[in-house]
Image (cartoon, rainbow, N blue to C red; front, side, top):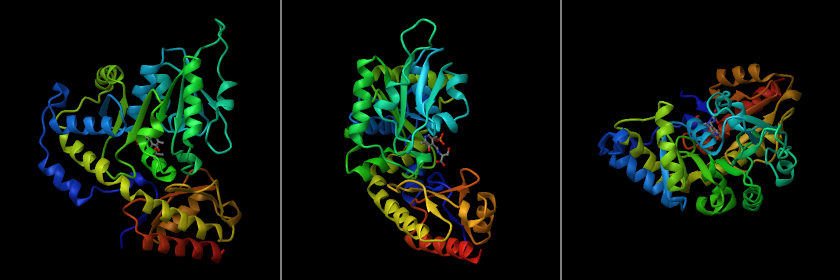
Length: 344
Ligand code: TLP
């Protein structure tokens, strides 16, 4: 029996349509800007986001890093919420490569407001590092897939512009946010200076992310991608899967959200478990401290029953739904969790 893998939506395997498209992809050398499939993917991504240009990058982490570096000068500060992916799971790359200092702000639900941000902007005094960038994340991974409403993002972008501060969106799961909010990704992300989104999470492509922005921004991003070792050659084989991810997969994300809500409802009724935040997309974070188990032991017990899920702290577990887990997989996984916690 294969595992029911709830560790992440990054674990999805390419669909058969993706595999076929990959096998048949027309390719060229993308460092020479000659790969027609990559060009097509970039054009479509720019179109879908209503932007001038887009660039295919190997990972979301590289897309974020390129964006942060292009919006800042070494020695400046970047505002980011304390649970942000850029701050916690991309090593210290923005400090190492872009030479910037993250100023992290703790929030209750991972979703920064302009009020939180305003008080963290450094005064224009020569001995203070200057704030040049704000990074937002939508949906917010470590806040349990929380969705930042459009108005909140727009207000931050508008006020930041008045202060001459750029705003980058880590939109690894922006298509999930769009589904949850019933808005298009173009409308949701319109005021941002740049957006990174992932093809390789809920959209199911095996590899790849995109950054979108102005033509000028993307022209500056291309040499930086090469500097970081991300200049790829006949990468149309990946872009072909990315095109299917982009065109066909957003429509099915609602199913993942429904499955996550179903699991959250069931988890909330189990002894010792409490859901962290409100489950709005495909991510569930739940506290197990009152079960008497730590997350390491909990994960091991799950694994021995065929379910994979990781702890994000000694007391909190994370589960994600995606197209490689069906509704009945989710129901079965909940049966197993129930058995583990009620046996105690
Ligand atoms: N997230 C991964 C892990 O790194 C935690 C996951 O399993 O959720 N931004 C956000 C919001 C992300 O969740 C991730 C990956 C990234 C950026 C980085 O993407 P990759 O893994 O392509 O570098």
